[in-house]
Amino acid sequence: MKKLIALVIIFILYTISIKTCPVITEWDKSVIIFVQGLLNILPVAIPLLADCILYWIMVFIPIFLSYVWGLKVKNFAPAIAMTVVPLIAYTSKFILKPIFQRPRPPVDLQIAVHPHSFSYVSTHSVVTFTVWGLVIYFLCKYCENKYLKYMGILFAVLWILFVGLSRVWIGVHYPTDVIGGYLLGFILIMIYSKIRI
Image (cartoon, rainbow, N blue to C red; front, side):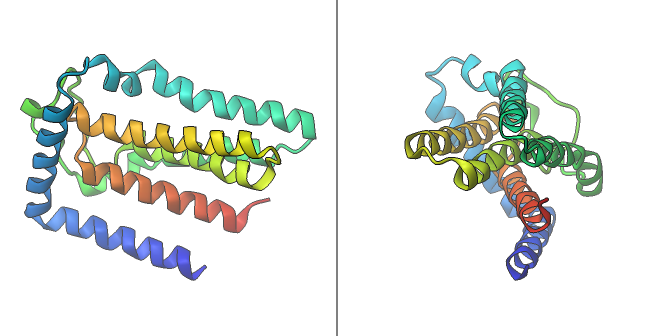
């Protein structure tokens, strides 16, 4: 419980520093410019994959598979968690974004997508982290096949990182929005691990 409280305090302090320190936003902008300059040789369709239907497919597949596994072993607690925790993560945007009201990166940094909502925290990042973080959690807890476990964990980590990078790459989120999303996702998974059924 102490680790969870410490993480919540870190998230709060992190959020306050983002809101009150303009230097962080300037650093964020320079990171977006660096990432876009580094990756401009690649087609813009690559980061847009994480912005559209593939994003939702990559949320749906692990949730669906958790219900299939639940049918097989007659244990739906992980499947329920795979549904409820990301849903909480998604709905957090309706609370956090209006509270913090951090504007999106400037339009001249946005590539192909121009959202009109606030920026902090990245909803794509927090939902992806909760879904695939729970995949990692359940693979570690239930999977006895080491190859499947490690390949699943590697894929989950790479997908989490790709989604976060894509948010910065297309300029719709600052890097600190993505990190905030990861922190919030980690907090939600820790809360689940403390109260799991």
